[in-house]
Image (cartoon, rainbow, N blue to C red; front, side, top):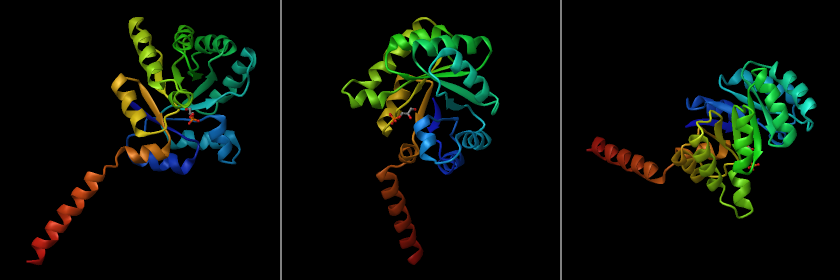
Length: 215
Ligand code: G3P
């Protein structure tokens, strides 16, 4: 499973990149607005930092406007992927962008029907939001299972990005189900390699080693 960082913060992206396991970045308008930087300049910085795909979201809602904005954003860097809301207008725009070979990530996906339709118009990625479904007492991971089943049944190439990940168990479940990508906030990435028994084990090994040296 590929690991993307869900962040627009350059320091977080740099730190995650040093781990050697980072495959890409997803941003959204909320994440970019937290940075208090000019968004286009910030996206360019992110694209320079990471070789893999970097999702940049359109603000436009109408299909023609989405296509116009997508064309501009795609010129920023060869690794830009255009993030588009999973709406009727988003579908129409994605169909057009697929024909232009512009990569897309259909975001704010909350149903398997949405995931099937965006795949039919050639979406490169679909981003179902598990955390926000959990927030309203729906099992977010059930949606990932459904999409995976449908995509396998029809041999669909669209890649599933598990988004709105809030904790390490979301990451683990995404891998168990066989999602293509998990996009993970930095605070959760940091937790993925942590285990108290590893820390206790190191402490004990070092104490024993120092005892030996003291003899
Ligand atoms: O990738 C989408 C993600 O940023 C949404 O996460 O935590 O705002 O639901 P959250």
